[in-house]
Image (cartoon, rainbow, N blue to C red; front, top):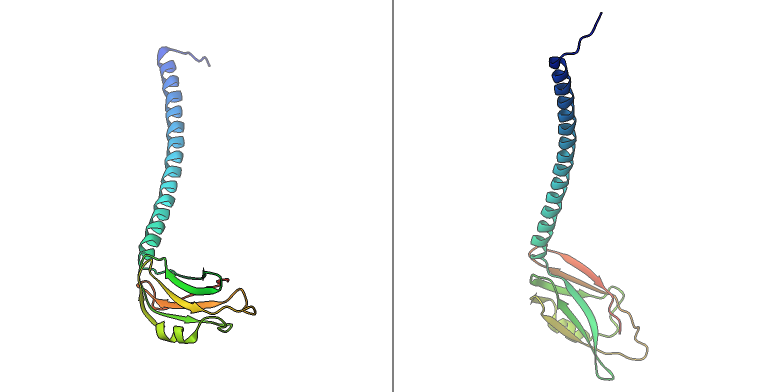
Length: 157
């Protein structure tokens, strides 16, 4: 059996090789494109989560508290809202007891009806030598995101 190689066989062999190379290149391209699509889907999910968090943060108030020193012996407890939304029906509790904030001042100002963004309320604090330096304060409020929010803060003197 003799094999004769003519121009048609050579062209067919080259065409077969080019076809195989094109198929291999297409498969590699499809793998890269699939990887790119998966990455794009992950990025879209992350962007959606970020946008959701940002939209929710527009509805949230964020309260904080700290003792402010006014001179040598005068202190005030400052409660503020650094969130993007107004806080409503703000209440304050002292889980470990209230040693330094005047109860009459608390009763006069709380529950506070509303505390807008960057607004604050101050309470008179009486500090003596035996007053502990760290206090536990529970802040409770409502906002557009949730009807009952709680935050425990640990202001120090």
